[in-house]
Length: 168
Image (cartoon, rainbow, N blue to C red; front, side):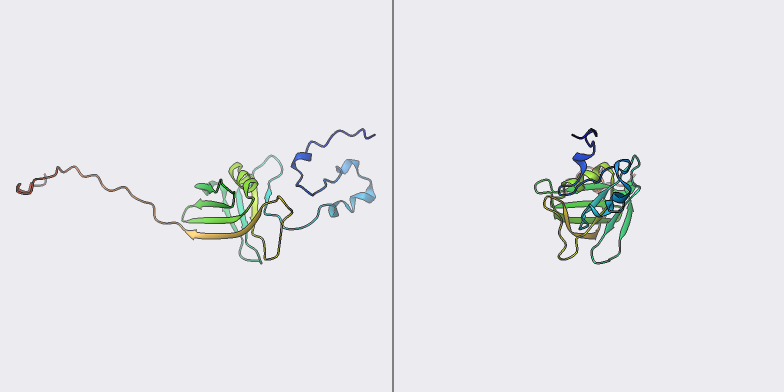
């Protein structure tokens, strides 16, 4: 029978992964193989660990494209598809990013909380474990100019046969 207390972080371990024993409970020969216990594969996002939040969000395209870092403080709006959690639209000044994929609810929650460090687009043929989010496309779109309200006029409508009034 084990006398160790239950792991308080067990609910946060991704499905299909096994959390390694804490360092103070490992034998020296086990420490060298601890890094090999978690399978390496595609991950759609990473959440900051620790008490501090990241200052920037990194968007990583597949196949070694140009990564983009944007400050969290410049996010104007986060819009997403609530029906199927298949799309997220991040609005920044002068540009909007469309993030498309499947199962994006945990990514949306991390973005809304400001704890998402990075998001990554899956390369062709890359897949995530079942139940994990997959980002298939990160695309930027220029924002349209802001709509302006029509100017209010203070002039009264005139009858057809009325004399034009002088401006005062």
